[in-house]
Amino acid sequence: MRVTMQKLDPYINVDPGTMNPFEHGEVFVTDDGGETDLDLGHYERFIDENLTKLSNATTGSIYSSVIAMERQGEYLGKTVQVIPHVTNEIKNRISSLVSDDVDVVITEIGGTVGDIEILPYLEAIRQVRLDVGRGNVCYIHVTLVPFIGPTGEQKTKPTQHSVTELRSRGVQPDAIVCRSESPISDELKRKISSLCDVDVSAVVNAADADSIYEIPLVLHDEGLDGVVCEILRLNVPDPDLTDWKWLNQRMEMAQRNVRIGLIGKYVTLQDAYLSVVEALNHAGIHHGASVEIEWIQAESVEGLMVDSLLRDLDGIVIPGGFGERGIEGKINAATYSRENGIPCLGLCLGLQVMTIDYARNVLGLANAHSSEFDPRTPWPVIDLMESQRSITDKGGTMRLGACLAKLRPGTKVAEVYAAEVVSERHRHRYEFNPKLRGRFEGTDFVVAGESPDGLLVEFIELDGHPWWVGTQAHPEFTSRPDRPAPLFCGLVKAALDRKEIGMVAQAADEVSTELDVGSAPKQAEAVADASSAAHR
Image 1 (tube, rainbow, N blue to C red):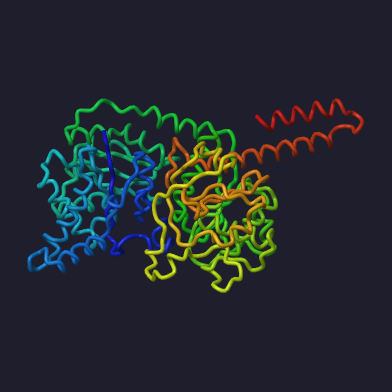
Image 2 (cartoon, one colour):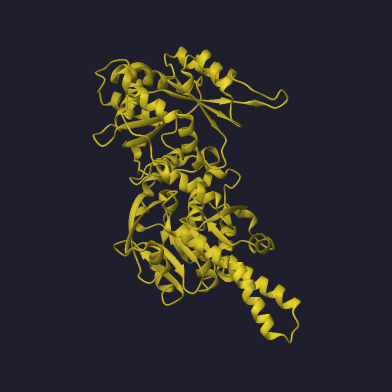
């Protein structure tokens, strides 16, 4: 089946683009430059389809459209009301995804049943079934079945109340997905079925799993896909879940592990780096390794703390972000990884701090900085482009969405991409300053990729370093469980190599201390055995 997905968010912001990551997690960017809810990242990773701006709508954007149409006279002077004008616009957002290339549109309404903000959405989807026909709509309601520790019971009351509230708005769920800490019993399913007027086969349990990528297998075992196809009268064969099973088996069979430090500003809310985490996991699956993420607050990577925080890491990621807080810590992390041979991947702002580090500490450009953080720096190695300076609207200066880049042959970046031209998504305002690019030429700082017109630096790397690579883009947004982002694959491979070399050296040291100094042949044989064991 050809499927597309959509998220309707009840909050009044026009989009998540200007929201604090502590409020809402990461902003996921689509190919066409939409700044969207992070759930769209999960949608793309699971259905492997590139979504668009149309796949995310908020109350703010819906009301903006309604008010704009009223100002333009499109309502012919009528009183503008929630019903029908707002609900019609919600329905328009849903139907905008309908095309000859799509069999099924899955629309998620965020929030909680009973919230004031969600009422227009419930009314809109009630009307959708009337508009398109009963057999063309399936309502799936996700509820919580909590576990009450002292009594040792799983309680169905929240589900009962939620369904009652939903039905009072004219929506009867066709299926109920019960989220729970542990599996629920058949008896509990029958109770929910009886009290909520839903077939017992349509009461589905999604208990906590070790990995989010187990969930398609869990829901299939629970029969949700069969229930939905029956309700929508879809005559389809049984699904082929071979790839999903292989993916989960590969995760379970991982024999190696690496510690990757993520140097971030918002590490107390890990959803702020959701796609980065998933991209690291995808690369780990590809290499048959599990990735352990060390969450490191950027502000703490200063002074005497730098060595103690970073020395035991196998690799480092410096992700994107906005604002001055933590910038010096990110620069210190770039310096430490460069000087100590620790594989490092810089994403967006990460490329910028790597550039600042090199300018200051290798090229000797004292006080080099980004003009975003120090407008008076004598060496603005990161700066706004001339065309952006007169734009006052923050959104207007952003480079958003997919952009092409030409890769320099023979570089590590070109090797992992195995291509001459690539496309990655962007979300940033400041660029590598082309006026100072000449300062970097002829050094081991390599511009590994640039925009097709040659004006913008897109990728950098350090010649002779195991993996010190930065990109102005966000390759994490296009990473898939079975097709990981190449730069993340390169980082994890370099981290694994570094760890194995360290294990060989450690094993050799331990062997050498146990042998007599005069027994050279025996010592060489033992070191070789240790090396082989460490490699395995």
